[in-house]
Length: 208
Image (cartoon, rainbow, N blue to C red; front, side, top):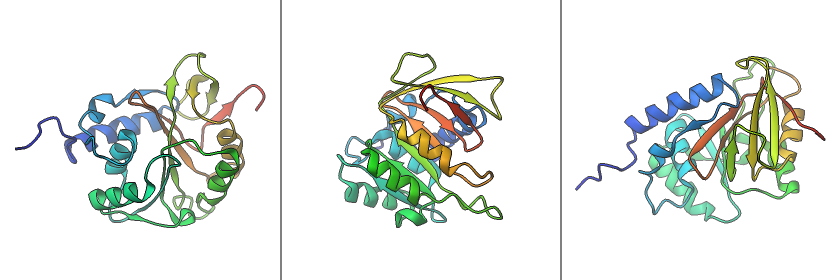
């Protein structure tokens, strides 16, 4: 018997992809995907957000790297490979990164040095980082408020995150210095919200 509420690998991924595109086109805008995450299997070894994003972004043509300090990374890697047809690869070769738990500062540095940023002639050969944070907000009410400027933003936009180390922003700025090279971020939280930080987005933060 089929569970009518189960995550649908065609219809739900299409819905999520449209919301993800909207987030990329309007940096910092928070989109809700909680309705899609309710169908993620409870036995999934990774977070519901990672599972849904992986089903949406991955296929046989791309590779991924999975990171978690708390969840079973081996089980998550196998589950993602099995359900998407994608392949888990070395960190410096991955098209997509899925980071399910917050790393320590030295590990953030190692991750950002490994992430592909493409080249001036082939900027598309860069990586997208899907980063799990505790909470996202459009108000200045969380520990990491960010002022966003750039393409897709009328003036400026405020995005706040809880559970995101400021080191991500510092290293992102370094890696994205020479446009069009760089990496893109997709943030997702425990409440089923997503927001995007494309490489073209400038981030201002007091003390940053």
